[in-house]
Amino acid sequence: MTPIRFLLVEDDASHARLVELVLREHRVANAIDVAPDAETALQMLYDEGSHEGTRRPDVILLDLRLPGMDGLAFLEIVKADEQLCSIPVIVLTSDDAPEARVRAYAQHANSFLRKPVDFERFIEMVRELGLYWTLWSRPPHLSGRADSGDGPSPATSSQNTSSQDTPNDCETPPHERGEASGTDRASRRGTQRSDRDASRHSP
Image 1 (cartoon, rainbow, N blue to C red):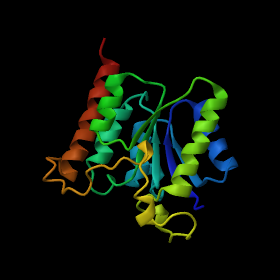
Image 2: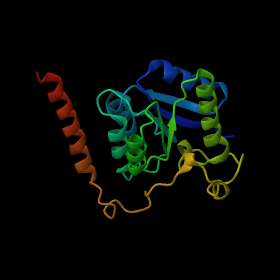
Image 3: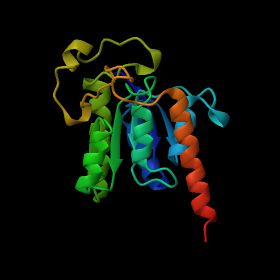
Image 4: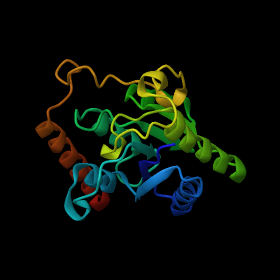
């Protein structure tokens, strides 16, 4: 079993702590970075500001209900960036509305998991999620480490059919997907910040 690096984007501190404890208890993760909002997560991914030097994750666990930029907007930015789009993004949220699921998959989420209300079931789901990504699946980068040889090979694991490993269209060149350039994406992020700032100061 190969421990991997997770980025957890979660504003609920109790949920974030619980996920950390479960993954560490079962030795699933060799590192877990926690971002309380989408902007902080993007700074980590883009190696910006006070988060300069943060290593990119093997898997992102994403809540949708976040302060400021919501999870769907974050997901759109990540999956539109050719440097980030191959990172698996697992939506882990209490929002089980059908439209939320449809929009998440339309933005190329790799899986959509609803947080169970029951405490014990939530723990079990996180444990199984972590084991899936370490024992069976092989994320594309694995934090720059060589494969340990435990579990199935990449060729074998790619044959496992699971809702937790849904492919996206990263293989298609960005210009063919109609995506924005890096400059345009930076501009879009700046526009989103400006819109939020304006809404805070509006009467």
